[in-house]
Length: 259
Image 1 (cartoon, one colour):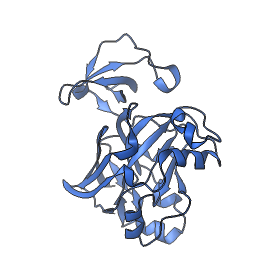
Image 2 (cartoon, rainbow, N blue to C red):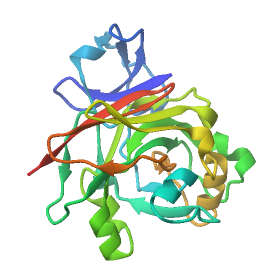
Image 3 (cartoon, helix red, strand yellow):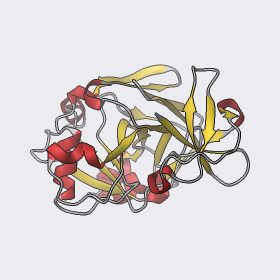
Image 4 (cartoon, rainbow, N blue to C red):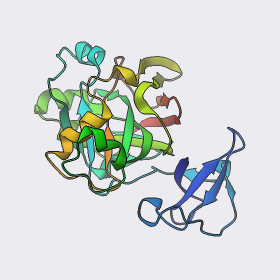
């Protein structure tokens, strides 16, 4: 099931997306299904082409991201795969939606894309074992872990480099019925393929990641986990467009701008 957050020009709404590409329809819901369930609003359906999609979730507290979780990416970045998951946070103020601009921050000249599978948490999650992790997952969406590489090198820690405003595009919707174990993940820059990997190449799987992070801190409903990126990351300039495609979900496109 595809659950979207969208607007027709009024307040954000939620709905279920159904239909074939080019003829997709949204059935409106009464509220955020994370908290009120799948309750139809009673309003008539709207065509997907007639709405603006928003980030499908604004994390209640945090985005937890994983670094160097694909061996080929760790190699291209000049490092080894960490023995334990390498975690960092992105604030919820970094989140934007499909086709929203990613604003290149002043003071950085090396902005990079990173296409990733994202996991949306369903329940309060603390001390969960890997074998029970699926019970805590609401669904999956697409992320672009935008990174200021020069700030990353300069600062030594990654808060500024990966947490600046608009550095976490999410979308186009949340897919609640998906096996994430072996999906194609592809990133294009201006239509040219730059990343082409599979989620089966993750070093630390999703269930293990949830066990590892929930041993340290509580995950709340709506929190998002970014699971790492395959090799092929590179720099992007103002005016260029990046699209991340993940099998079974769809695609997430954003244009990078300088203001």
